[in-house]
Amino acid sequence: GVSGGTNGYLARFTSASQLSTGVFLDNGSVGGVGATTTNIAFTVASTTALGTSQIFNVATTTGSSLFTILANGKVGMGVATPTAALHLESREIGGRVAYFRSNAVSSANTQLVIDAPTNNNSGIVLEENTTDKFGLFYNSATSDGNRLSDTFELYSFVSSQPIIRVDQAAGNTLNINSLGNVGIGSSTPIASL
Image (cartoon, rainbow, N blue to C red; front, side, top):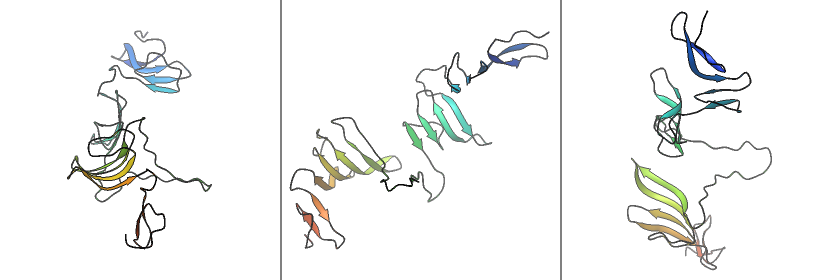
């Protein structure tokens, strides 16, 4: 007979007649890899807590990572070692790195939301070869360097100064209409400035 398996785990043969415990948990209703117990349909667990080891990876036949999850929770698409909560890389020249589209039938607006905790700034940073160049920011109630509180800015990291700043205080709203007229404190500008 055969021996050496563990109840609840898929068997792994170590020789023609010897079984050992495999990494696949299967209790008859749910399964997992690296998991000791689970009540979720399928669980992948890491033995390294909050590490940078890969706990899940989908790769090409040459080993290039297409989709990976690290033990610290970071997710990468097109990159084997993601450096942010979600890290996307594309090798396609001139192609889109990400594309977001709502297919909702109703007339609801489509939004991409970037939310920061209270008294923290939120924004988008444009880089060239990992060097910050420009940013689009909402600055909260806390000032940050050359950024004023409660403002919306197009910011230059090259000059460390805002290029355009819009203050939310009453009367300080900047409006540019389709004719190119600019109004400060006016929602209907009738002249270039």
